[in-house]
Length: 306
Image (cartoon, rainbow, N blue to C red):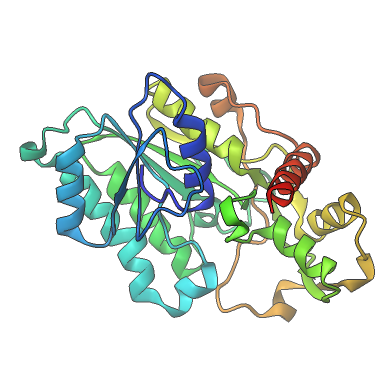
């Protein structure tokens, strides 16, 4: 798997490292940042280096690859376009070509690629299915759709897992997401601007990992929506986070997308129909309230060790 240092990547490693039927090779750029380093092999890999991709894939010849590596900072992608293209588009071309290369003997490899709700424009007015027509509104979204199209046009065995606003806790608390951002900011007494007119289905990282693993276990191909089961406004999410940890709501300032004026345009309303994932994969994600309890337990465990 790629992107093992990221939020999804870490969850995948910890869920798979104990399985007797899996020989896990975790890869990411630079050194391994996970606390637990046993039960799997770590291979440094820069997916934007074509030769490196071919070398690592040929060396290990994996049966399944879960590509959890991407540049996901939407505004950074807008301003650092070459970097976004390298990670979200060119890297896909390199990985697909490495799998297709007959010299590498990987013709049976199942490639599972993680994508995003941002490929849609958010104007549908209800949850999106796997068949809905994409209409990306930002450079990030365009690169993610282009990456999907490279995978779909290939001759390899492929699956695409689309997800929405992933949250959770990583080793060393080194990465933020909406839950940790709201919680940490309010705990420090900082005022935050919270968008009122964007709607999302927040996804617990463990649920997304389970969905990706189910795709691999069931050899399920095609596109799958893997998100949380409920759609809320970002403001409602922040209120729930605030209330769960009994923080000060008065520090939250409501703003519209227009007022916030972020570099990249976001779809106003996304959310997924999960029927296919439930039926084919047995995917049953946690509610946001349940997810907050899981995050709280994980934070307490980390704090107990400090």
